[in-house]
Length: 326
Ligand SMILES: Nc1nc2c(ncn2[C@@H]2O[C@H](COP(=O)(O)OP(=O)(O)OP(=O)(O)O)[C@@H](O)[C@H]2O)c(=O)[nH]1
Ligand SMILES: [Mg+2]
Ligand SMILES: [Zn+2]
Image 1 (spheres, helix red, strand yellow):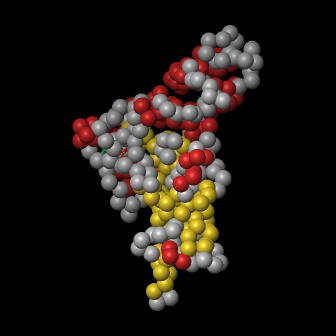
Image 2 (cartoon, helix red, strand yellow):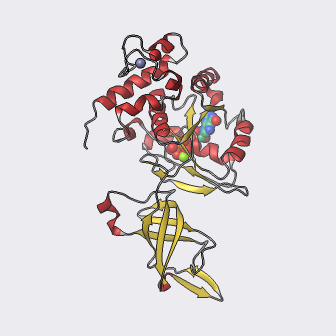
Image 3 (cartoon, protein in one colour):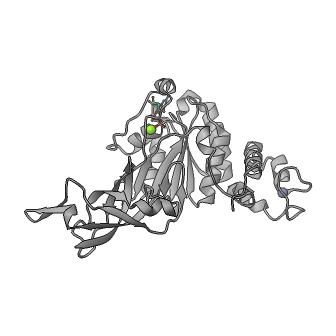
């Protein structure tokens, strides 16, 4: 007999997917269980691939499980468990490879590694375009309190929820933990940030029990590798559920093959530009150096940060040079 049921991918390693099958589905012997599945081979013809966070349809048969003393367990050989379909996604990212995200915790170290604002702004644009809510966390604040304050002010002014904290001194950790335990309940959240920024350390501090591996930054530079290698969703504690994902840190290179969005979309991905859009003299204003540009005027008044506008200009130039494949 063949069974069909839905579940969520919580982990992917070497082509093997870990899927949490939904509970409460009649006639599905493995309902509520966590199983390992392969993806059917034809996804690649459709230019798609299942991602962690996806809701999927899994098919299996009587060889996929055993019943011992009335208890159903997935069979050790894991035969016949196949991801047959991907349910419509709310969004998906290439880096980190995740689908259906609600919130992204963007971790920026005040130092070690030094903050890379243009890369952060690029990530923020991609998140905005995908309808993922960014939360800014300026970490390792004890290394450079002044710089931490400046970065927090930059993004606080954009309108983002911003936290300054140090997992070493404990400064600011409680405020963020209170937020994480309430605002993230029932949602799918991931961390993103440079390699060594302190993402895994932060998750371990706020959600004890995750026991994520963390690494020494000098060691990392030597090896040129991430401590966190793969993306995995972990259950959030509490009645409402929800998931949190640790991810491997990015470097600037990772963004080069981003097929993100079109030039026309760019101004809308800078949240603080919103009130000024449509108010420039020319309807086709690029907000680069045009006359009577409402955005440039706001930058001149410092209502919009010149740092953010510089990131806008950089992304504009990149997108303008991008080839169109359609
Ligand atoms: N000074 C200082 N160091 C910290 C702090 N939090 C974490 N670290 C250190 O930063 C280094 C990297 O931390 P991780 O948590 O592994 O960083 P990560 O962002 O998960 O790194 P990848 O998984 O490689 O992307 C470790 O040596 C941590 O001990 C902090 O608040 N202050
Ligand atoms: Mg890590
Ligand atoms: Zn303009």
